[in-house]
Length: 223
Image (cartoon, rainbow, N blue to C red):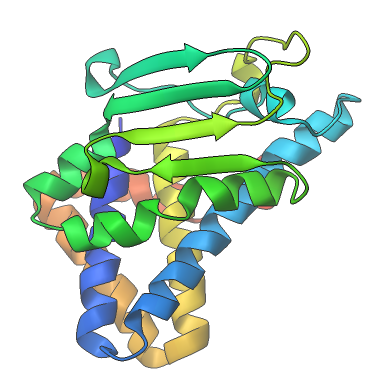
């Protein structure tokens, strides 16, 4: 079963390889790929909510999250306020842990500075999701979901969640699509190298699971 740390591994390898290929444009390209991935995920959440007749508020956003931590020990969160805004801190997360273990804190800064904002934007560009800090630079992530606690919200429904093999496949698929569009054959080479490194790090079975999930249609909310 793939997990959050393998998800971070994929992002970090793309970050390094894009910088090797295109030092001048790398930050712009990596940010674009990250945003595209997150916006697609947020859009899936929104479409499920609309299917169910829900308003696209940040309370609904919290109810339609696509995953839970694969291991509770991976994270440490502190909720400061639940109404009218949902205000919380993250003291530990598996992405930060993985980026740190890889010596990839430059990737951490680039990946996390806009990821959650892009998720919320993909869900509904009119909501006010605030990222006040990330632990990579400030030692703690601080998020405020404005208005998320104004109304009671439904608990997350398992049928709307996807395993991390799905999310790893989506990340790989989106970056692959974008770098092929931007760099052509050189982009194909980037993805081939990311996949090679993933298999070397985690083994052939994990790579097969990743590639099987990469082939999904991530714009289909039922896939």
